[in-house]
Amino acid sequence: MRTFRSAQDWLDAEGETLGTSDWVEVTQDMVNKFADATGDHQWIHVDVERAKRESPFGGPIAHGFLTLSLIPMLSWQVFTSEGAKMGVNYGSNKVRFMSPVPVGSKVRDTLVLTEAKLVRVAVQTIVTHTIEIDGAEKPACIAEGVSLIYY
Image 1 (spheres, rainbow, N blue to C red):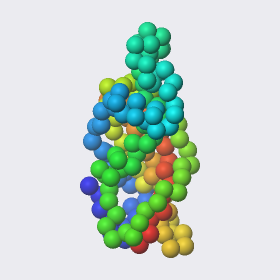
Image 2 (image 1 turned 120 degrees about the horizontal axis):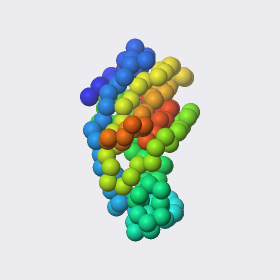
Image 3 (image 1 turned 120 degrees about the vertical axis):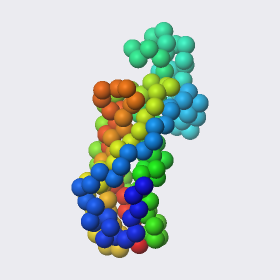
């Protein structure tokens, strides 16, 4: 696991691959809970039998935004910020859902620190996340996450 102890550590690491998380299985229970939390109960996600019959994916798939929402959990497997007062999500520059994530598949995240700069009293980072699906040619999602880290 990569440990950042100061703003300068972040600045010095710009351009580096920070690492890759462990594989995490995307379960139907996760998909159902995400559907309940967001109100998105589209049948391709939550109706297993219909998805098996009618979906071009051969079964239910995770919501794209569920895949995106795994980034914080997967990121904390890769790095930590010791001594930081706090870190906040500042947004996303770009998010693309390249491939559907079938329920039951495993995903992991590879993080690249694309940019780090000082802004006022924080370090602004842009991390490019590539979320892979175990055994798939194309990634599920590529997203640029923007964060502010206060020391």
